[in-house]
Length: 638
Image (tube, rainbow, N blue to C red; front, side):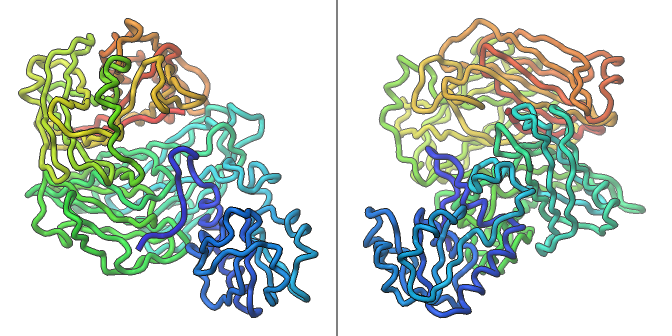
């Protein structure tokens, strides 16, 4: 059962109306608005921008008697909304309604225009009755300004053996003199609010760290596993809250330690109908999918389901899930005969932002996320003919860690509803940017079970790091759509600790533009610059960073990369420079990148900004712990 509201459109971006209707602190106003509409007889709905259906999808319409739906745009007349044919607003007076609901924010001007059209004695309500307080808005003059809803969710947990830490930086105040404030709301597993607080984002560039242990102590909480909702008030430049989220294990008093060390990144903020890239469990593993309701309305029983990738027989999850609640799902209970390297599709029905999953192996765990599966893509017949202009075209780069210590496993993942054949190859490069091997993967069916260890294919690297690029290989038949994804799994040989990360392909480092590629973090394509955020661990951990300079066609011979170390207050402490060959990579460690005195001056809470004004780099980061524990995920930029 899909929630019928547009959350994200790939050409227009995120739908701010969706965020306004689902904001946790607008939920009470939404429920009160429905109650007011239901209490006063027939309601005529004036729906200038098509918001009425989305409001009803989120907050329901129980008890509301609809006299008619009215639009200002003549093109909508005759279309159907909420099971009513849309009428011209000029017929509003004849509706006989006792109340008129204007389904819009900032509605005062329109309400003024409607006065001559109102039914006799009718009162008027609008979505403005569920607005957030003005003090919580970055731009009070335009409620649906995307900067008013710079929000995101984080999977946040603190138990006897696990804690989480969210890390980002105040990148908003660099675009505006207005101070940024973070408004936090912590939900427990049942969707109840455990804590709510404000925290200054600090000076521009200041690190922002939220540690579950400190939150638990500050508010006197017990154990929790739920969601942290983050709303940045005073946001500028970016409306998405990006972060790195680390999970740490520890020993319970008198118990066995949980050897968790894992990292993942922001939750993407926009719910999708389907997600893909969820691995089935191996014989000695459990895979736990965390379903977290992102909305103030319950998820009905059966509205979310799982199916083996390539098999449309969906197994529904039988239990309902309350507003903002979380539930751990053992996927083997619903797909008991499915085993890795098979993959699972999540039918989420737009009820949840990008879900997390964790893989349990003995007393170790790793956490990763599934990815948005596109339902708007079709195979692109132009792609095979673009090689003359765009060389490798769409490519997906990922590290190959030193083979003596780690095993690297590649698993292509279908990530669009229409992807039935994936014609792929892997190109293996050494750190100097030389292609040293080619790994044909063939034309993979949607239900493939291909997961390739690079032990043999990358043997030419010896024990040196390098990287692999997944590319389309149309010589094997099939077609592509540009939404090329893969899951990359890394296993520490001695400890068996593992990490995995997934991402999608792009066109990299060409000045020619194809559609919206090469993408840029700011401005129009071509994206030929880099600004990446590297969070650092505390004194107990070293930090790993793998930077790749991918190029669809040959670009500059080498990068001009600066790494600037900042302390927790955003002050610059030190700099390092790198020159990465085109199609090459560098594997870095914080402990060797900066000397001990510089690291001491930076202190806890420090971070690095990786900047290159000549090319776009792709990066992965992680922490290195004791006993072979490590984490790895791709980095974010801003």
